[in-house]
Image (cartoon, rainbow, N blue to C red; front, side, top):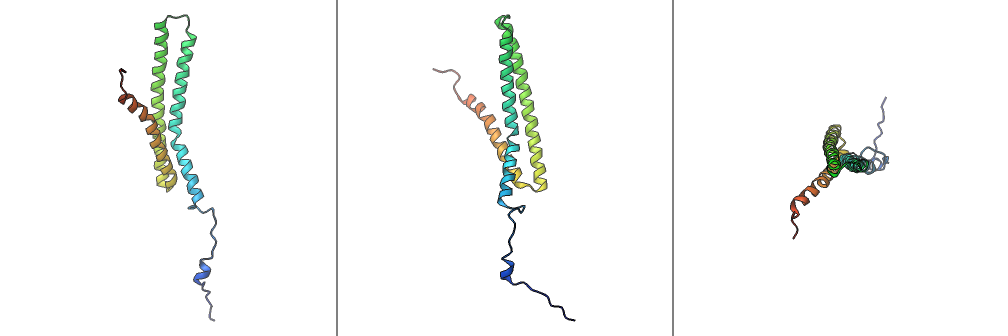
Length: 144
């Protein structure tokens, strides 16, 4: 008994159609990149929401204390603003740490596109946070 082995010619091997939903397709890499960018922007979103809430609470405290003199109102508003600032900084730090841990997890799992997207978004977040501080230091404090 002789068995006949079928051999495929090189021309027929190149005509194999691969599905578009393969794990390395451009659309899945793009989706992973967008997902990483969205997760990387969460610290900035939480920072903006916390700062907005702090400003709203400070304004509300000022409006709810019309019977007090100016110095008492100012003291209440400043304490609310300082507490909100501390809470905002802590929230931003926690969210950044969580995002960096997620990037490390993605890198270990081989989801490089998601990790790159998150790192790009975190870099933009740092620029958005640091740029006003740099501008405040560089601008003259005593206008002519």
